[in-house]
Image 1: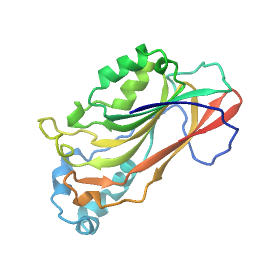
Image 2: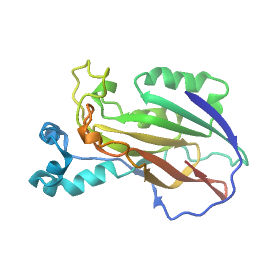
Image 3: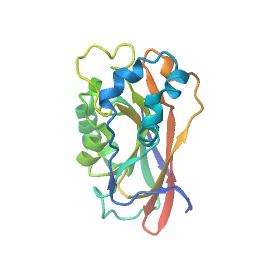
Length: 222
């Protein structure tokens, strides 16, 4: 589903995380996915020696932010911004999505894109960094907030592939033609424990809020 909004924002202030330059989420957990999956209950995993050793790396991974603020550096300020919200369903049809965003008259004028359900290093989407590729092609800055470290091939209907996950991240992104000053991933109270689901994961669903600099004004995007 694609939504187009034209919104006029007032200036805001924020104490969210500053996003200078670029930052990419890195971790060395890939060789341990099967070991993590071997725990039947999350409480057993949390109490395990493995978790005690890797707790900081896991938390930095699923609660971190990835961003690149170097892709769009000279965009004229506007009073009114065009914002597109799109659940891109992992990025399974990323090439077609990029083409549509570039060629559609209205979507190509987007100042902000809210991209929901973005993969980063998932075998089901050929281990592409979906947000990064989207942003680089459209020449937009971006911030990506992981919701989950995905320990398996994917949800029901997504497992008919042989590619192993690399970074195994899945989350929400904001792309902007303007500088993204600050951002924060907002935890959404879980409906169920996803560690016990058929798509075994660590983490929780998150929203993403960002402060964008448009001229001398800041706009809060979520």
